[in-house]
Length: 483
Image (cartoon, rainbow, N blue to C red; front, side, top):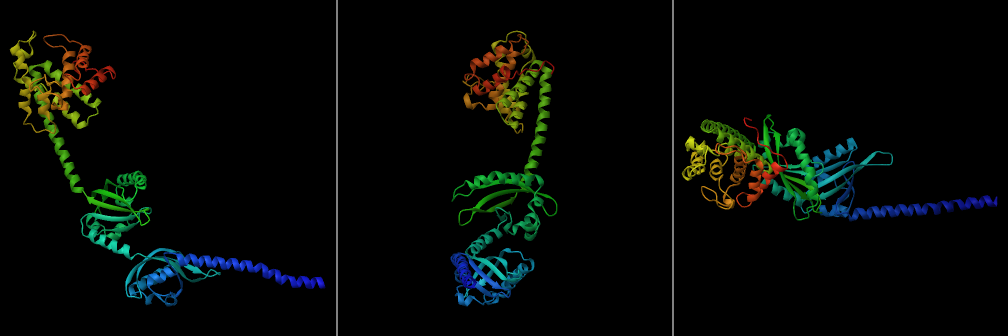
């Protein structure tokens, strides 16, 4: 019995000693919890189901300019106007009904000193041990300064014709969009906010936008403050009435106060008018090229009727000149100009008597001086022709030489336009490699030796090297007669 009594007497002592550490641990946890809440920069609050404050930290008191004693028991209608109180009530009702947290709600409060402040808050539901709702808890931030800055920019953005917008960097959610969007797209601001980018943009533009963003994002990350990374690109978008718009966009990566990239600032301009004008210009240029091509073909036919040798020479020279230009990596537009000039570069020979052009023996000095006039005559024939290419200068200079020993103007070096320098090399190679009424072909190797020997002297070195590569490495060949 004594042992049982001893056991009985000991048991309560053991239980008490086991509970003390648990209580102490719980007490420490609560203290840490309170310490964290009290030292938060954001305001923290707890309210009951009626909206009365049951707890708040010092930061919230500072936001409201009230003491903790003043705050506890206050309802939202005591520090808000009717409109904002209704807004908060509806937000809390939504949280209560769904049980889901509300990550963002913004409203205005009136501090004890009468000053209005803008507040941004996140709210969640509090439940008891049985899972029944007992109130709400939330974290608030005073965003008055930010809102004032936003309002200043909003005033600016609202009164410009360009479309200005702000999006969250990660969710791409629209934070701000200027009213000019309605005139630009035909949609209201609310409609644009709800309209997915994938539906606003054409499929091709949407994919290009995503690809561009993926490319530019790492560059933005590596851009150190205070520099802002920005980039531009064009997109096509659907107007509300169905027609397509061309937009020019400039995107900037904006940092928050901590320096972390948080926002995308967009400036969008409607360039549909410019694009339509460019398209019309291209159509005009296409028509002009077609007209020039027809005119040139008439001139070629006239020359061919008088001198079949010259006509074939022009065609083969033009083909070689285009091949050299392609080897040099020149643009399609420049190559097309060289082709056009090449097939009429001897057009000035129309003024030379046919018997001189077809003479089977060596020319006299007088006859050769007449031949040397053909670049000048060709220039006079072409100088007033409207063309997107410098046809007249190319024809005028195709017998000039790098060292100034050519004709008719003894031009040298860069004074000779590039197209004429290319045509000069092609002209010499074709002439030496082909038969003439007064001599047999000298052969392609002899022609290439001439270019090799005089590159940098008579002929542009870069052009000459491109020509030599064509024949010696890429096996370029002139088409057979009649081709």
